[in-house]
Length: 110
Length: 115
Image 1: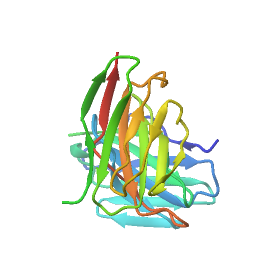
Image 2: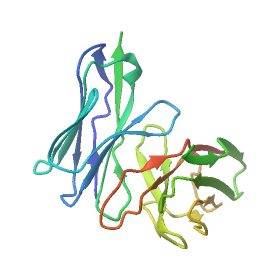
Image 3: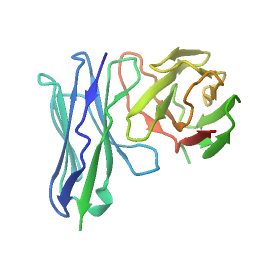
């Protein structure tokens, strides 16, 4: 059974701090890695994707991938109260649908 | 204005009734997906389709059926055989995922309540 694991949280950080969200996956064949943000009662919104080992930066967001350790993370710099949401990690292999973790709830206090 | 639409936003049904959830996309994506989300849970795959007139079962297909007669449309029917149908249903689409996996984009979801 392919699995994606995330700490459910809540992860609480003060405004302006760096939030670090982590995800591990079981299938070494996984090729693509995604981070979605989901506000309460809303659908998931794609914020980052990464395919290769290393870091990928987009504005305040940085995705980090380490395939050897089967680990992917999301860093949010200068966290804002509007970043408060549940963050879903998802992985897949070519030709298959996504496998989602249960998500980590982030709370940014002002 | 490209995107994915789902209707209705809220749906209430009596136990024993079949219900069909609509999903339409104008992103020209080949692949479409249906997921279910329960409170405090991640998304679980029900069905997916990578091309018109073809679809595959996901992890929790029992009690559900789909069709893919048009590229733009992928309706989901929740049948009376589904034991716990109350959930948040999410439709997604992506560029066809042959040998490369592409990001998926989600519609706004349909919240189904069965009593």
